[in-house]
Length: 162
Image (cartoon, rainbow, N blue to C red; front, side):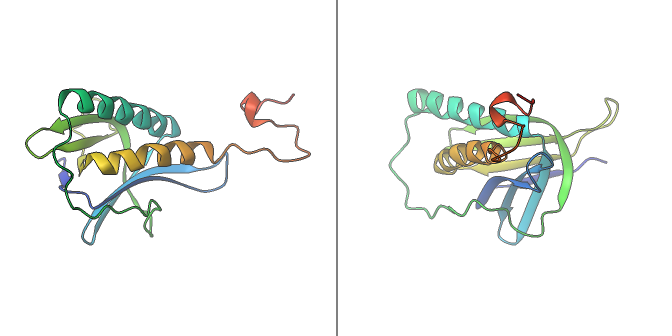
C-alpha cells in the first residue's frame, strides 16, 4: 500500500547533488524536526522545479500579495543533510498553493509502473523558502559544468569534443 508523507511545515528544503560531475545523483530533501526525507530526482527535474517555482512566485505576487512579513526563522543552510538515503525515485512533481496558510506545497510522486499506486511526499514551504531555493537549484545544476584546462571536452558544447 502506498504511503503519503506530509512535511507541514518543512523547516528545511533543498536540492543537492552527490558525486562527481557527469556522475552526479540529484536529490530533493526536506525535513521537519528530526524527520529527514530525501528523494532521488533527475537533473532536468531540478531545473524544471526552479523554473516552476519562479513562475508560481510571480503569479502569487500578483494574485495573492504577501501578507505582512512574518517573523519566522528561515533555514538558509542549503546543504544536504547526511546521510542522504533516498526514500524513492521521483516520477512526477507538482506545485500548489494554500491561500489560508500562505504556503506552497511541492508534491513528489514515486516513479512506479502504471498499474501501481505511487508513494507521495508533500513538502509545505513558505514563499521565502521557495525564493531561496530557486537560485540554489540553478547553481547546483550548473555546478557540474566546469572547464577542465587541457581537456577536449567543453561544457559549452554539452560534452561534445570540439
